[in-house]
Image (tube, rainbow, N blue to C red; front, side):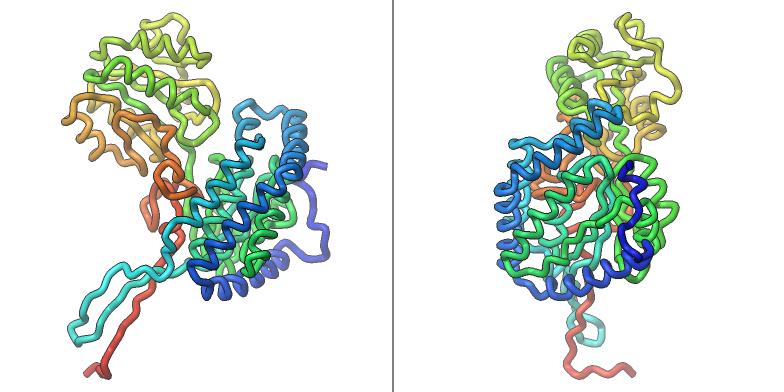
Length: 427
């Protein structure tokens, strides 16, 4: 039976299951909130060690998911997202250790001031509470989300996609073993024990039990979460990322950045999906030819097709498509304003790049393009919390509230006001 339709093996309704797990998570979070910086860091190092020790079991579980995914006809890009091997597990363990080495945000003093009546006002970071994370395909999210939540003093209720069900369970078992061995509450990191879609609906409606929902997946998942949630949502929308090659771009740099932005890993949210080439850029044929020669299918407007006959005709839908594959839409634009106008119309607000040696043009692009991440002379594949020095990320938020861009430790905290008086009474 397909895991997406597997019913809960329990007399509990989905609502009762979520309520029970949420209550356990909230109780664990209250204990976790009392843990010291050193205790949380030690628990993460133990979790990383446990994942390394369980490499054989985790890869065997992943093999089951890969076999099922291949039988179900998943694309090469989706299989790449799903695949675990020794090097990727080492990267997961190292990312957990990186999170352990980061400063603990909990308790940080954000600001201090004096009230007119003489009290001292302090704003201090605190955990958000219990965070529900609903994600698809990528098993590394299980470890990344667990590490970031624990380090920031939050409990997590994880619900992974059916494609990675065995991998997620094996990673969670190892992570939980490490947390328990370090003496922290194992219920702080829970994995939903069912793939029943009804349990997702119950999570989305668990206001007062779950404090925030983080969806990580395709447009369909995020749209459902945003439409149905009664819990605050930190949204990660699709990554329709653009690279604009300005007239003053260095040709060799433009070629290298463009090929890397698309072809390094086509299935990640930071992969370029649309290339905009300035009509005045003198080496457009070299850049487009390099992409074609690397095995990328190009779909372009009429002017792009005039540059290289191998380019297929783009449809209106191509400009708004996250391919997550070796497919790229290409348009020729007349200058910086036209490039930014195209991005404003079609970008998902994730990551957009300008390649240019004209500093004034670059500064205008950085200031005026309204995306969570805006880059100059570098590949959009760097749109990643680990590459930003955040240790890992729970997602890249494309909205404008609370947190934006790669969401890591700081983005998983809120704050409280502490008011320190000397006996003042308000008249």
